[in-house]
Image 1 (cartoon, rainbow, N blue to C red):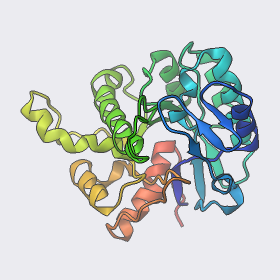
Image 2 (cartoon, one colour):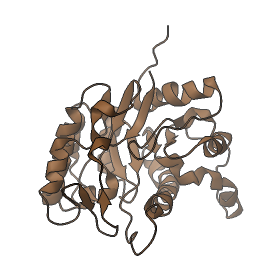
Image 3 (cartoon, rainbow, N blue to C red):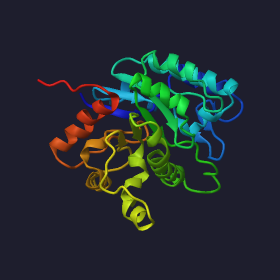
Amino acid sequence: MSIDVHQHLWTHAFVEALRARTAPPYLDGWTLILDGEPPYEVDPADHDPATRETGDLALVSLSSPLGIESLPPEDAWPLIDAYHDGALGLPAPFGAWAATCHREPDPERLAKDLDRGFAGLQIPATAEPLDDLLDVLVERDLPLFVHPGPAADAGDGRPSWWPAVVPYVQQMHAAWYHFHTVVRPRHPRLRVCFALLAGLAPLHSERLLARGGAGRGLVDPGFFVETSSYGPRAIDAIVRELGVDVVVNGSDAPYATAPDPGLGSAAAHAIRVTNPRRLLGRKENRT
């Protein structure tokens, strides 16, 4: 079973919830308005499940750069609920990550949402990973997906690629080290997947050692990195640092496609099948 752990698909319910708003984030027709970014023209065809390449399982997630999770509860929950209802209504082979409001965390509400059938919880890298929410995941043996959050002040005459290449990467880099130093000691059984190869943060281990850090050569088997928007060179470098067992397939569709790892059939099977199943807590079927 080939698994893609990172896709985005806006259902009708979610689109209508965004259109009902008059303050960012909102949709004006198909024009997305965000704080700190230029208007973005959404292509409706990008969010048609009938045309999406999925493999055997594709996990969709709330678009955290929209900033929904950090809104006040009265603004956040209608959007999150619309996303949840739409995502759970998608046909096979889609699954979904749950989302939650971080302005006023509600562990009981998260537990009820997860029990509806979500694969785990996604949080923006800009959010503080709160113990009460992480405890809910550990109790259910479900993973966490850390995704870039809002790119503040990313407009300002900068090119359209700026948010994805600069602030998103910086956020993931910071999240990787925060989880290792602060979160892991408190949650030793939590499985975490970091989007976009954790901003290539693992490749900075030599600098970490030079500045008084430790741990190079010690790989946390519960901290996974997914491959979206990178290709063979970056994936190869990450595998050399972390090994292949913690690398999982992610595309970030419709904004990118899943890369070919370029490391041979055994590594491709590990990245697309074996490792994602372990992240999700599923046993691999063998014939």
